[in-house]
Image (cartoon, rainbow, N blue to C red):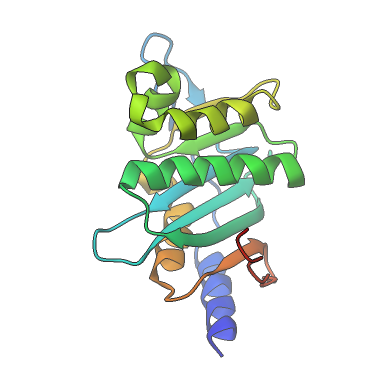
Length: 186
């Protein structure tokens, strides 16, 4: 019953928000330019001190701005909001390598972009950043940009909902969701 409710909520969200995506400003201040939200993977992590889980969400949109694939899952609560954002990026990158040719990522979390620009300034994230760098090598034209939360609402929605589940959750799909069991941790 919970799965059917989540499917209907997802479809209702799609039906309500099926509009063309506007342009957003890239964060590179030295060379400002307008980018489209086409062929981009928008991602978000959700974290609170009171929740048992951190939520992760991502949405891949094709060149026309249509959602092609999305994912949401939760993990045991991470140490901070930034840890959740890093996990969301890592998971989104893994999925883009498996399911698409997308090499552009967007986040509303500016600290995540700063961390990737200067990883040595974040020694407490060395292990996580090493995993990201290993994945980054697989993307010949990897890029990440700041996308304001107003343009990143769907991945935010997925991450918050994943966090609120009281059990492990993993979902990857589009239009007609396919619920996948979580493999046991080794």
